[in-house]
Image (cartoon, helix red, strand yellow):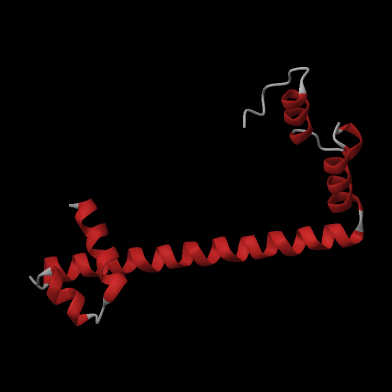
Amino acid sequence: MNGVYQGENSFGRLAHDFNCREADDIFYKPFADGVRHFKETKEGREIMCESFERLADKVAEERAEQRAEQTTVNNIRLMMKNLKCSLEEALNTLEITGKDRAIIAKQLQKSI
């Protein structure tokens, strides 16, 4: 959606509403009521806080997984270089199987 558009039609009013910080500035009552609930009531704020905490936890978990995956990729690269072993040998040594094996092999191919 192009949020910059502010025309005097239904789409322009909707774009305007998405950019509003205050429920009183919103044209569409159902949307304004929702914003008012989540921003101005204790229950709504608690729901939003819980949602953002879950989102933050999910993002942190995904980043930790990405760092662990990158560490594994770097370790395999070092094994291949310093121990003169093949990708298959390194993956077998670290007992990496299935989907993880394919993901790591793909990552290593990107960096070559």
